Amino acid sequence: MAIHPTADVAKGAQLDPGCEIGPFAVIGPNVKMGPGNVVKSHAVVTGHTTLGAGNLIFPHAVIGEIPQDLKYRGEPTTLVVGDRNTFREFATVNTGTVGGGGVTRIGNGGLFMAQSHVGHDCQIGDGAIIANSVAFAGHVIVEDHVHFGGLSAAHQFTRIGRFAFVSGMTGVSMDVPPYCFASGARAELAGVNVIGLQRGGFSEDQVGRVKQAYKIVFRSNLQLAEAVAQLEAELGTHPEIAHLVSFLKGSQRGITR
Image 1 (spheres, rainbow, N blue to C red):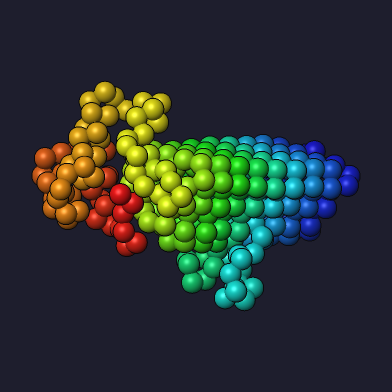
Image 2 (image 1 turned 180 degrees about the vertical axis):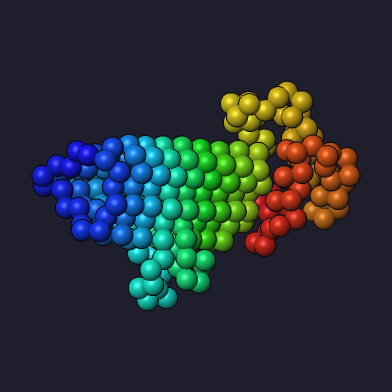
């Protein structure tokens, strides 16, 4: 284990011998780290935080601090981070709250760029690319392989579906469906994230079905419930469409259109 002599590693922290802790970094007493984690200079990992393997935390990032929630009363809530995530300079990730289930969770292979923020009780899937100064309020659910452009934000309790793309300076206040491209000061759909689907390994047939589904739900004159019923009847046996149908049916805040 490589721990710089100026680092402050609290008694009780459980660090795999393969971790590297840089100058003036701070590691709290309830932190657990798997192999290959690198915490660079002046970064802070604190709280009841568990890191998997191979995460990279850049200078001045703060991972695992308490929620920015006035109802929080010091309960021992947690942050669970998977493997191979990168947190760039001044990124912040908060632990959960009792009212929100107690756990903030981040999957694998994410990139959280400078000054991005993941609020309490968020659930972030695999492969997230979160650009500079993006802010997630509490309780946001981000499915796998979602990209957020810089200076965008998501309102609390919103959901962003898998392989969605949210462009820069976009405000998300309702759920963004899977596979879609959202843009605008108040997010509106601007089509299918075709490039993202292709990069994600979707076949030509799958992309075609997603385009067809988008037309049925968002470019017809049908009410949402009618469109979802038609979509389920015509294409619902295909897994990518079944996921879209389930997402649309499960919306509580309403669907970005």
